[in-house]
Amino acid sequence: MSPAVGDFAAALDEQVDLQEELLGVTARLRRALVEGDPSGLAAATREAEARLHALNLAERRRERAAGELALGRGLDSAGWGELREALADEELDVIEPRVDALENVVRRLELANAVNGRMIRHEMDRVDFSIRLAGATESPIYSAQGASSQGAGGTPLMLNTLSLIH
Image (cartoon, rainbow, N blue to C red; front, side, top):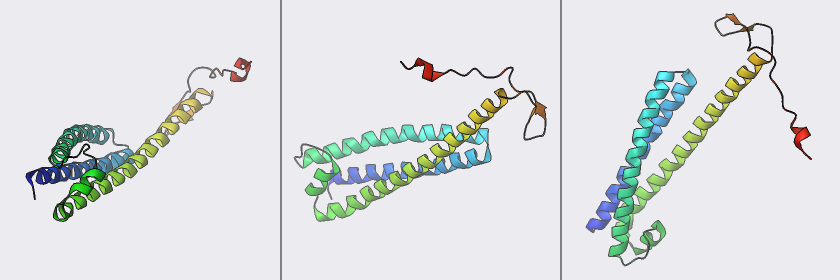
């Protein structure tokens, strides 16, 4: 195996490891969302930002390793499709499982992010509904602790958007 293939494999391994770590952080973000834990949410968010920065650097290293491998094989592009065709069978045996692992963890991360995003949108809808409800009534609204509070002063102003259409 050539040094360029080894460098490319190492860069792929690094990306897979960082993506797996980010997937773990995403799970912690979900737990904090479900539990309503603002300090856990803040900590997981900071951790996610650090992992994303590290992933950005790892992606640059992987691109550089792929570029060097492509250059060494006389390829014009460092895309996986072209690299796959240029690799010997034993090199492909080393690289292909790593590419598959990276694609797999990225799909799992996309799913986890979609679930978290949906949970955040749901919570934002609840907050919006609560705010609207608080402003639309003159009667006391009871909190989860049973305390009553008066809604926002007055009834909300509604804009008649149909009158704006000519």
